[in-house]
Image 1 (cartoon, protein in one colour):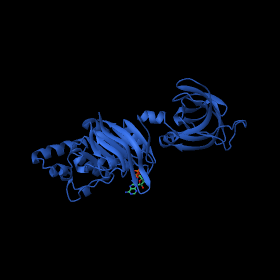
Image 2: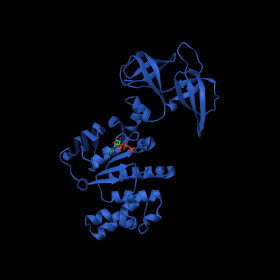
Image 3: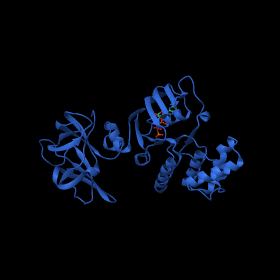
Image 4: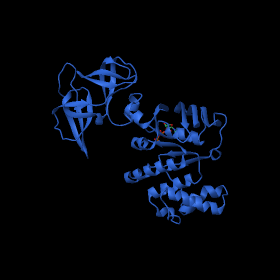
Length: 355
Ligand SMILES: Nc1ncnc2c1ncn2[C@@H]1O[C@H](COP(=O)(O)OP(=O)(O)OP(=O)(O)O)[C@@H](O)[C@H]1O
């Protein structure tokens, strides 16, 4: 059963639709990341689910129960939803245990039970032994863990996260990614997680909903949005890669032979396609090799384990050489010189639907 269902959900602020007729189901126990550029409507969607905003049109349901339509809204505190924001919103004058216990005290849970539940969630977030620490004595990552524990202690079936790791440094972020995966496993909660960090979204979620301008463009497993983006906008939001023009020579059901700058290769395809198409080539599917698509090195930047190399494809009818033609991005383990002629072997290509 769907734990959360949004139906043609629209939120307008003045003239602009921050959310534009979005329909999406969130299965019980699923972990969905809302991913997209700044201003695309991620936070608005979360706030409508939490009950901090009312819909302009459409509905929010939890199971069969109506939470909100333009006329009626169940107040946030009656929705039984846990919310964790980027700012931790902790009580500075309380210690860790008091902060975490707060939602239970507000509900008049018995003192003996509170201690046990606070201990259990501090264990989950790795803050055992920090019970009597003051908030100001904690690092940013520890504060976020306290906020997480305070949310978990209430045992909500639905937990909403709005960029919870945005204030943390890279090292802490990756350790928190592990903590979130663990929390999802242990609680089985239905999680909706807003981020503009695609690495975080792909690593954490079992489904990624790609948003742009108030719409959900694709909602699918991380591997699917990466390998088979539904359109050019999704391809641009998720992962690195090049989108090049080509022509379909011949097609089967799920593949097609395409011509890219005079070179033929087989690409995956969502259905039959013909004529000019746009093809997505991911850097890891391209390799400099003795044979393959001819190209010329435009630029090379060392990025740790690999050189990120920009290549120019030959212009049709002009032969190889740099020009205002199409470009490829590849990761090369070997250094290459600008201006060098190379060949590129392609192990995977995707014809972008409708592009
Ligand atoms: N209270 C408000 N009043 C007016 N406009 C708003 C309000 N809240 C959001 N908006 C507008 O709605 C659009 C979507 O905003 P939203 O905060 O949902 O985006 P977002 O995807 O979460 O962005 P970010 O990643 O920057 O947080 C933006 O254009 C924003 O300016």
